[in-house]
Structures are given as C-alpha cells and as structure tokens.
Length: 503
Image (tube, rainbow, N blue to C red; front, side, top):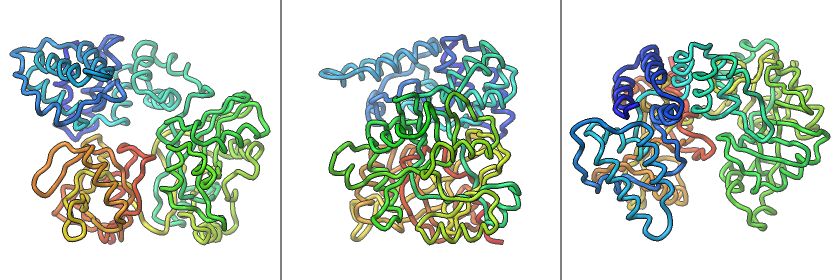
C-alpha cells in the first residue's frame, strides 16, 4: 500500500466530525492493507508509530530542509522500516545516522507526506482516529460485531494485534483471545455521577465502596511468579517488592486482581498522590522503607484457573473476598446507608465512593454506567495544550496552562480554559522542564506542546462562553496534580465538561 493512501485517509478523518464517516474511511483503508502493512497502518491512523520511542524531536525535523518529491512512491512498509532505523540508532554517531535516515525518508516524500510525517514523528498528528473510533473501523472492515473487537482488544491490549485477528480470522479469531496470566488486561473505567442519589438510581442492585486517591494496579500471579502493572499496562514489578511479597502470600495458585495502591501516613490517612507515584520509578532502599505501599483490591478477574471477566460483579466480588481478605477495599454490598459510607470515606481522607452494578461483567473503557464515581469535590482530568510564560516571581517558568477536553468523536482536544492557580514552586519547575520536552512551537508568550500530559483540575463548574473553541469556560479552575498514570485518551470528554455547567 502506498503511504499516500494513509495520508489521504488521514485528511478525510480530520475533515469530518461525523463518527460514521470516520469509521467508513478507516474501514476502507484497513481492507486495502495486507498483513504486514496492517500494524503500521493502524498505528499511523491512530496518530502513533509502531516504535515506542523515535529519538527525534521537533527541532531536528525543522532543521532538515529537504525538498519534497514530485510524486508518491513511498510504501507504508518502507516508512515503518525507516522509523525502525530511526528508533534503533544509538551510541557514537547516532545523531548523524538519524539525520541521514530522516533525510532519505523525507526526500522520498511528497509535500503532503512530509507534512504528515512531521506531525506523526513529533506527536502532533490529531486526525480523529482515537481508540474507540479505530475499534469501530476495525469491526466494520472485518464485518464483525464491535463488541467482539472491543473484547479482543481488552484482552490483547494492542490495536494492531486486534486488527490482524479481525481481518484475517474474523469473529472466531477474536473469540480465541483469552485472559493470559502475565499479560495485562485493559482496565474497566468509571463514569462521573453528579450525585450519590443519581448513582444509586442508576444501579439499583449495587456495591458501594471507597473511591481512593491512589494509583491503579493490576496484579497477576501464576504459582510464585508475580507481575504488577499500572493503569497504562506498564510493568512495575521490580519497583514494588512489598506488593509482590503480599500477592505471593495470598491463598491461591493463580489470580488476577484489579485495585488501587497508595502510601499511608502513620495514622492511616492517604499520602499525596505524587508520593505514591514516586515509588513506581524507584528501587532505592531508603525510599521503599519510607513509602511502603498498601494495596486495596476491588475486583477479581481470574482465580485458580477460572476466568471471571464475563461473570457478574457479585460473583467476582465473592471470589475477591475469598482470596484478598483484609486487602479488599472498604465497602458494602446493598448497603442500608450509602451516604454513611460516603461520609466515612471523606472523613478518612479519600475522594468519595464508587457505586457499581452487581450484575455487570468486566468491560474495558468508559462504556455504560455500570461503574459510577461520586466525588463531592468536582474535578476533571484535562490535557495540557500549551503554557504561557509567567511574570513576577514566576518569570522564567511556564505558568498559565491551556487546557483541553477529549473529543469523544476522535478529534483533537478541545480547549475549554486556562489556569495558573494551585502550583507550588516545585511543580512550576517540573512543569517548565517537562513542557519544554514536549514543545512543538512557540511565540513570544506561549509554548505549545504535544497533547500528552493529563492534569487533574478542581473547578467550580463551567459556564457557556465564546472565548474558547469548546463554547465553555472553566470557573475558578486550579491544578490539583498531574496524572502520570493516565494518557490523553483517558482524559475527560467535552461532554463531561458540559455536564458541570450550572443551570
């Protein structure tokens, strides 16, 4: 397949807000890709590459100055091979090698293809094929049910693998995906509820449990072998020895548990989220001793050879209580006084409560209303789009953040406001360094960045406004914390922001 076909499809995706039109475009181009081309095609149209890290930034590409080719000749496979070479360049002479690879690649690309490559490599390619839209495109291309594709993706964790199975083997191949010990499952996520009353009304048969300010973990055990993963499926086993030891001691042969972990103060209250997250990158003995992590499990996906993903929560919860014992998150099934659980959670320093339907299976993503989170303090997870240079004591620091909400139809994040509040000097210094690493362009006042960082914002609702593209403006927004455990695709949608508008 010519690379130009992918570039044309990308332009069509960016030109429409219609989810139906996006799915039709994706379906057509995926059908045209052969087996070897399918992985890179899926990645490119999702705004990603098949390589984890390319080691080439905006400045490197801007300085190339390569004239475009007169006609299209590049194939998808050739582009992917060139990016492999770019990613593998290391050691003495690697900078010259990367420059040569990029020069050769861009020299064979037309002007449209060069523009696409520039945005793809710098992470600026936001054409409207986010995960959910791509999954629907795969289903349409393979003529299989969307639910079968979503389930296979939940179990495989990789879009390209899911697409290959769907397009080469159809629904039977998708059904072959199973939960495998040691391969993380994409997590089921919760939807915000406006109030406890709303959450209870939507799930009349329910469990109410604490919503903790911790880090999501998924643990796998097979005999003595233990693996622990974050929300983004990154393995952290080597950094959390105390959790590994605890899981090995559970009364079972094999298990997969979903839960939260956090560091506690001496009186049992949660430490700041950043302190918990700091453990995921450290093996220093003194830090480990000072910040022991405590797990709280809330779901059981497998126990002693039996997969429980499709079982209702009431059965999964029974298995959880059997195996996790004192490490089950606080909560009650069919509680007589849900408000008392919320009050107790808040008094203990936690965020609120979760209300979960007892009849629902485990499903990845923010789909349906089976899990609802109730947080009295209203917060949103938004994407940082840019930041303005500060003044006064903040001179030299990137301070005023431009904030975007996720477009549920797959478009680029939609700007909904700015804030410079809630930042300590330490956070300002870290933020400035990190945002400069993500820089794509700048003017005298503002540094624009790749939309990768997710920040939790506390706000007093939103109001209608013509000032920002989303038609909304955040009221009294302040930074609570950055969320390194989340990706841009996990950010709240523009619909979630609209839901905070006060009538």
